[in-house]
Image (cartoon, rainbow, N blue to C red; front, top):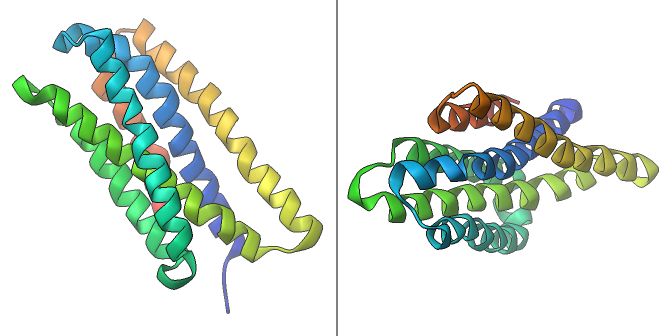
Length: 181
């Protein structure tokens, strides 16, 4: 097949940056969410924990259907899940803010799990031998790098009193890039 391995690889890397940004930026905005919506530390903890529910569910399902459903379709589910989670977070308000933030974080976790379920085997399928090991290692370097970059972006934006909604919009940048690639 005529497959652009480079585009798939870099698309996977931007998907992993999206995953890292969701960790770093959502952690960076927690105190702002707590203050603005009068959420308790326990509620904020539950909001964050929804990520850990969505992630393993989508990893297990994605791993089981990878060869029948396909990496492209799993990544489409990741893109839709990331987008719904980000948009729902940004536009959540009112007396139902707590359940909306729970659901938005669940969607983000689901998107992150789909990213892992699709990208790891896709890279492994695209390369072989030593080159596969090298590319998988390069792919996984983007996660800690994305956490550092996302943390710095969140800190910078918080220090300059840019709202948490604007910080969430930043996560859409790598999301759109991986969708295009």
